[in-house]
Image (tube, rainbow, N blue to C red; front, side):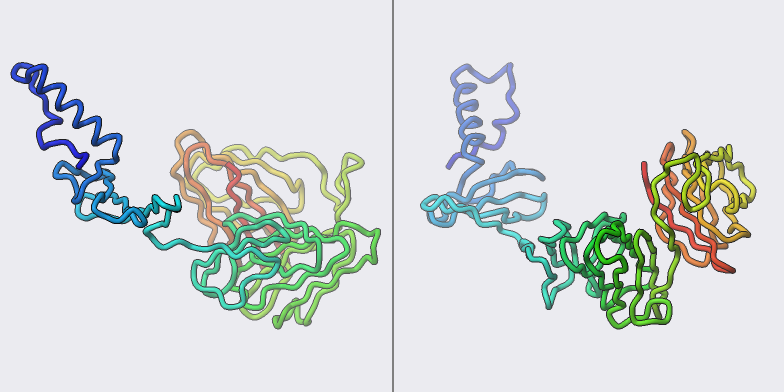
Length: 329
């Protein structure tokens, strides 16, 4: 046994002889270097103590973690082959260009085409909470919250989308055959089974629970003059501090704005049609609330922490207003 005796960790300098001290140090050293090995959990074990069961055969030596109540098997070690076997359930990762056909909840899948790690939520495969950029090298099966840049390939939307799923597709190169097809995969896109996206254009789609609806569609163009090709200037409007009242952003003027949050306030929906982005920065106090109940559809969550920075993307089409909040802290 390589465990020290109860009381060895409480040395009395007034009564412990040099010989006794040397014995205690030797036992403590032996316990440390052997991983508290013994035929049973050490009597001195506390929350966080690891120990090795020395009574086991060399082909299956268990290593335990004491959680303060019971021993948790961390792994077994085969001293003959040198193999460690985890003592707890592990989650395998499937690696392939297409997802597993019968996944279980929480199953992991590494898309070998896009090198994205996905997890299954019992309905569909999910990526991270933030939009992910994807550059397909073949026709692509889209997943929720992807930003897809396509050239000579088509896109198929998820077969079982959840309400408020968003996908952005950009046709970035006109050197091939121009128009690309976005397939609805059993769910209509703006009333049709598929959608033709010309180049160079970008479209953002959101699933309403009935069909995919178009949030935005715009021409893609580089900024070669003082104005963007879509008609908005490159100026940035400084909106100042939020205060605690109601703010109605002007969507018909400058489309890039900044706002400092220094109190809880209401963000009303704009009155005109268009698109804008507001960089929202909390002051050094933080902890405020923003009321956004006027919007038809909300995506994302406002981060209220001090000095946090969020990007508010606002789209107004007719009577419908859409707000997407992205944490960019």
